[in-house]
Structure formats: C-alpha cells, structure tokens
Amino acid sequence: MSRNFAIIGGDLRFIKLAKMLAQEGHTIYTYGLEESEELQGIKNIILCDNLKKATKDTDVVLGPIPFSKDQKEIYHPFRKKNNNYCRIVRKY
Image 1: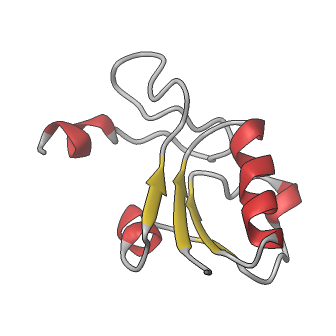
Image 2: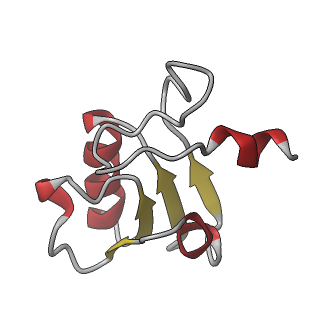
C-alpha cells in the first residue's frame, strides 16, 4: 500500500530515507531538504517551499534527529535559510 510521507528537515540519513521510500513507490513531500542534490528530479519526491504544503496530504510526518540542536530551530542543514520553526510545535 502506497503512503504519503512528509519529511521535515534532517540530515543525510533523511535524504537516504526519502530515496528509499520513493523507490518503494511512496510519495514523499519534503521541507528543509531543498539543498540536497540527491533529491532533485526524483519523480515521487516533492520538494515543498513551505511547511503547510509538505504536511497537507500526508499520512506520516517524520522530523529530524535531533529535532533541534539549539532549542530554537528545527535541524535542517540542507535548507538555505533558518527560520524559527520550533514555535509551531510548541503551539500544540
């Protein structure tokens, strides 16, 4: 059964995970991985430009390990700019 996954941030481990899940036929929505050359051009990997798009139609949401290194930002070394994402999680 094919599922829709959202992968938010993360390091090389999450890039490899996205590729593995895509190879198994799942659709992957990513946010915070747009600087990864490995994910460019893969048919069922969608590089989203905002968090809402990445999580809108997903069955499973995966976050980085560690989630944050500074208690302020989601860990996302493959994203161009930093934004304060942890406050989104604290609301819930």
